[in-house]
Length: 132
Length: 147
Length: 100
Image 1 (tube, rainbow over the protein chains, first blue to last red):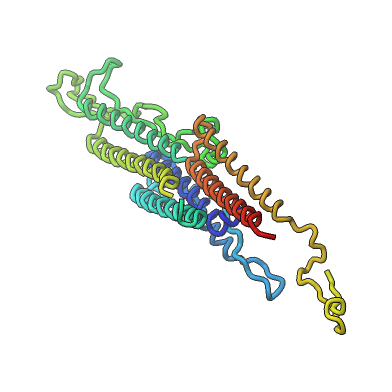
Image 2: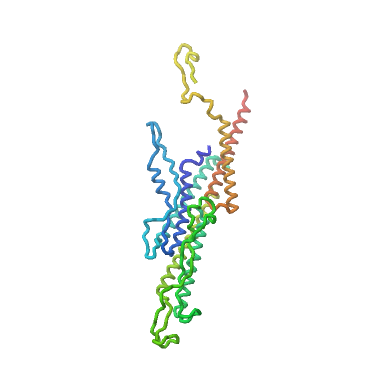
């Protein structure tokens, strides 16, 4: 019973929210180390895993089978960003790029939390039938 | 996954950049100092930054293990710049040697000003990051409240 | 379960077979078991959420997202359980009121 309550795309929303919080940690770390010689910026990869997972649909052995969307939950990973250009002191942090990432991630976090809140509100509405 | 850890990381950035600014201010104040307690002209100081290694014990919970070893920044040491002092021809100076040259501190005002600007910008960036973390954490609390 | 048609409709031939692919319907859970399983799961969600809250209060965890979402999920599940219980009681009372 409770699986249906919190199934569908809700686990994905939660994972994305976690990944967004983790990404903020990584960005904060990059910003703190903007002047550290030889520092390589780090990044969180999550959406790439999702895309890769969704590109492979579930196998169907019978024409009547419904190709359900794959369980595309991926764990976010923190890794150094290999493609970032380097400054003379070996540091790869571009402060303007980090600030843009910060803003984007903040908005994404807000959006995800609003979507989750919306799901909770819908569930409560359906369960209580509009009354309290 | 921890917004509280992000606050600590940004705080470490603020501390480190402020220390850098202190060192730069020290250098600028002593740009013309020819006499020091250790003898000779003032030697330029440099704040050496490094990644702050956060031990696993400091990170609460398994979910923070992904950021092990990445706890922001810290000043490893305040070292002395080993480049030689500048020899400036100034025969009237009380500390001039026999040839009329004075050993001046190896502080370049332009370099220090540029460093000051980057340190200030970095400081402001860390403030923004900290505010963002705080806003995100408060927004998380709203998930439960308005639903 | 197979029913021979000529026992139900005399003169006909053939059998009725149930549409269910599994012959044995006895191992399908009963309504009471389903309900009990669901309530146990909901209770477990309450316990997990309480444990996360305790960890957060004690400073053992920093993960605000997990604490908040677990608390909300447990609350919604509990509301569902309460509503289901109300409906079950209503249905029971309705049946008891029926004149047989």
